[in-house]
Image (cartoon, rainbow, N blue to C red):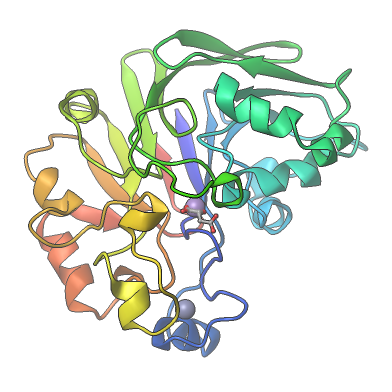
Length: 301
Ligand code: MLT
Ligand code: MN
Ligand code: ZN
């Protein structure tokens, strides 16, 4: 299995277009590595690729990734897309894939329902793009339009909330429902776990992550209140459906006993100090055996 990090940042990217926080200023000045928004590419054979989420930066990500370049007059090695939720940072890139290219689109029934309710996604011609609902807990052999992808996929519910633009008056912040899922991809005995959004650790989730070859986990914020503390927003991580990394209730402590080949934080908000190589938080992760995703990071299992 080959895995490429297309985008390591959370919604907004790093730097975010309208943000002047210290980290974003450093990224603009060339003093911190910029990151595009949340996505992975996965392949069983290094030839045909499955995208895990389609970020608003997808066009730029394809450009930066030779494995995803066309190998013909009109061609793309991208044969399938899998979504973990309906957030803008995970679905807007679908609009980039509209130029008469056939692929298979997998998501939970809830997430496909959101796309169906938004006529803009009608730009994906149904004759070319088949939308396949996958129930959380069910396993599917991923398929490209012209044959098997060589990977099996299981979606599983993760505590989280509906996309920001679907929130009602008082959204449930950590419901385990089909609007937020994690992905487990398998090839032979190899297991990739991708959980870019998670509001709370559960025993079921911990059991599933154990023994994986690679775990990519929600690294949105280090502290729950860091956006407020930085003066860039009023929302907390938990209000956005994201468990913080640090602190006694954070994911670093909660996942301390996790055995996995590699453990990597991804979906990192631009206020999170782990994006800065010289931060003490970055050092704390390294000491605990965790990595920080970066655009272009490649892993072969
Ligand atoms: C999130 O991950 O919480 C969302 O991407 C936030 C957003 O939609 O701006
Ligand atoms: Mn997001
Ligand atoms: Zn910023």
